[in-house]
Image (cartoon, rainbow, N blue to C red; front, side, top):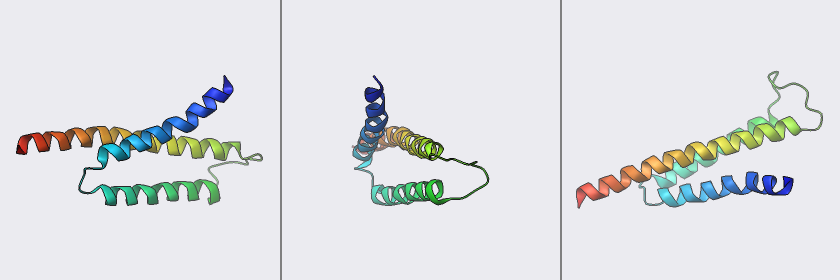
Length: 99
């Protein structure tokens, strides 16, 4: 059961990310959006892994860092997926109105 949960935690964000990319592939600004999101994720990861701040206390085994990293990436993917749903709907409505 634990293996299934770990697998779902890994696979669900990947599936949502691929679906988001597919839904936004027809968007004119897709490349710019993809580059901006990649830079944002790299910044997240860099701050979480290499950032030494007083906000996060001592984390001997690194489990806190792994949790923050997973939470950050999953929440980012969910926000982008919700954006992709709304943007795809807007693109479809725009195309339907022009025809």
